[in-house]
Length: 253
Image (tube, one colour):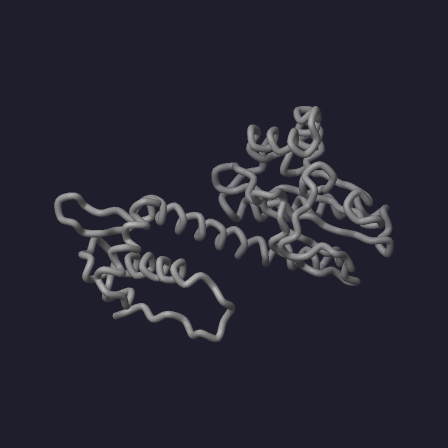
């Protein structure tokens, strides 16, 4: 069965990219090595069109072709992409439930961040009561050196990558000292360094391989007394430990 394109009532995209992804999806749906004609039919293309897109998928490691049979199949690039997508779905399925409950019970606004190319990037937002009114939103990039989320990434993220990002953000910074301090505290906190009047406490979540998967940060404005922050930090860390355990991970010693 051909894979039909989506309706046209959507945002304008790049048609060639969409077609290429349709060919990739068709190849995956075939369930194993198949000839060019099968891929073309599944993607709703002519054989010559499908061949051109498959050539690009071969060049990028997303598809492969058996030299003897000429059959096409998914290659390691597509497999890694699928595994990464599954990992993210699993992490966020568990994290969303846990931190939505934390925001409800603590009344603190909670954001989840992952490390993107530009730095710590907000990917989830759970509003507290009363909610935090701020320019931060989904997709916002947080400062690596001055946000609680950024400090946690410095503390537990990949060492070479974090060291390089820290030096780029602040040449000459003592990355090792920052990393040691954050790890000793088991969390990071800031007050007013990102948004005036806004306090933040951040803790890490680790995956099955013990790698830093995401950072959860609880926000507070002036209506939340600072005297409650210690309790919030303990509760947030407990929530992060529970999500880590649910993912099969372990909290570093």
